[in-house]
Image (cartoon, rainbow, N blue to C red):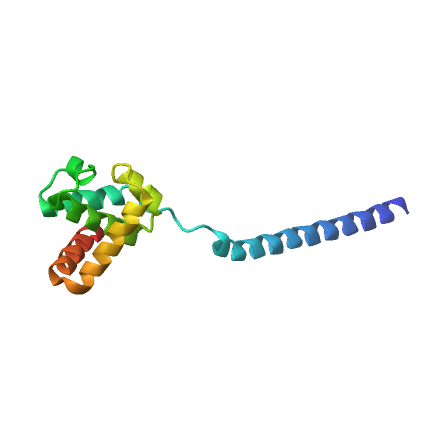
Length: 140
C-alpha cells in the first residue's frame, strides 16, 4: 500500500513539475515578446561625428583643429555650422554632447548653428547641395 501512495505522490510531483516548467516557459515567451518594445534604441555610431567632421574638413579644405577652434572667421564658421547640423541630424546626439565634440562649444552655439543651416538650406541651393554631398559621403 505504501508503494501505491508513493507512486501517486511521484505522479503528482511530476505533474506539478511539468506545470511549473510550462508556466516558466509561458512567462519566458511572454517576456521575450515584450522585450523588444522595452529595449533602448542603439547608441549612435561613436565615430560618426568624427566622420562628419573629417568629411566637412575635406570638402572645405580646412584643418580639423580649425573646425573645432574658437575662431569666428567665416571660412571656419560656415563649415563648423554645417558639420554641427549634420552631426545633429544624422546622429541625434544632444546639443551639449555635440558642443563638447566641437571643441567645448556651448549647447546654444550648436542650436544656433543648426538653425542657421536650416535657414540657409531653404534659400541657398549651393549649401543644400554641399550638405547632401557630405551626408551621402558619410552614409556610404
